[in-house]
Image (cartoon, rainbow, N blue to C red):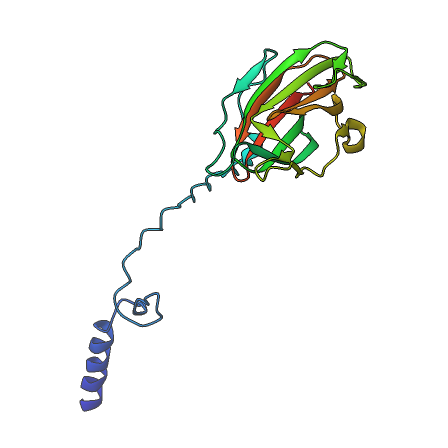
Length: 221
């Protein structure tokens, strides 16, 4: 009887023990520990870096200037500085630039002189004297600088301060339109140079400081 009762008790307990499914495994967080599932995290929004602003390099000062014209050009300049009666010529140079040829008159002291640039016709003559100068070209620009000189007369006896050439040949620097540049005058504080060109072309003239300069650009376009 005891054995039968014990068997009945075992059968009853087996019937109440479960429904045959295994217990669910505990949730695992993203960190690998047990507990509640980690809350969902919103994916970070995609950001696009703003493109870097384009930067431009300012052109050199000598590259700036007024528009190119075919008409005569003039400027008053800054006038002689204190203690100097006129601008003393230190250097004359011819350079090839992108789209134009550049003629630069640089002064050692006295500020920037006045200038006048105008077309002239041959024969090209010196002043004083009136001798005819040979200038290569089909069109001619006269560059008059005043008060300016290649001679310093402040000490009484004139002293030659400009030691550069009196003629600049365009081919020597690969000039595109300027063929020849010749000094035709240095008299009574007036200095004149004549540029021979391959043809009439637009030009511009302007003054710069540091050091004092008169710049004449002739378009090759």
